[in-house]
Structures are given as structure tokens and as C-alpha cells.
Length: 85
Image (cartoon, rainbow, N blue to C red; front, top):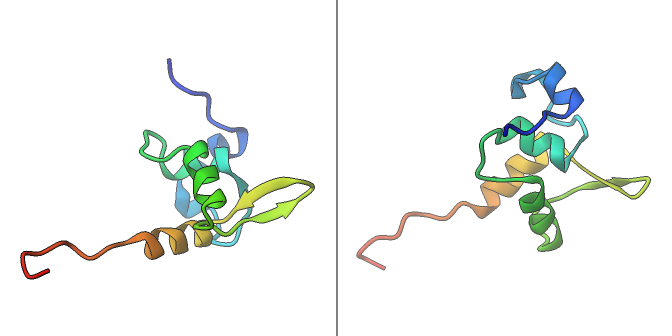
């Protein structure tokens, strides 16, 4: 069974249609940026709790931007392991 897309993502399903600083929920971000995985809204909540993802809190809602997700991804990148290490 396919998951139902959040309304705003269904209206603009391409990440390029969203501004880098546009606020979205974790569910929207996961559906927009990883429609078939590997990350989910739960993964983003875990990253936030671990201090890896910057969020905006408005009315007790955790909101994220494409720019914050890009920063999290860049910070989590690791160089390849080599035999010289």
C-alpha cells in the first residue's frame, strides 16, 4: 500500500519547487526528499534529538528546511576508508 503524500508535497512534488528556507514538517520533508526512503520522518526526529538537525519550533511544531537538511547531510559525510588509515 502506497503512503498518501502530504497535501503540500502533492501540490509541489519536486524539491526544486521548494525554497531552501521554506519551512516544512518532518513528514513533508521525508516525503519530498526521500519518497521511497532511506530516511523517514522518524529518522529526522532522531537526528534532531541527537543534535544533528537544526529545526525551527513554532507553536510546538518542529519544522525543518531543505537548507538545514543539506547542512545535516554535509556534516554527517565521512571520507572513504582507505588502507593507509
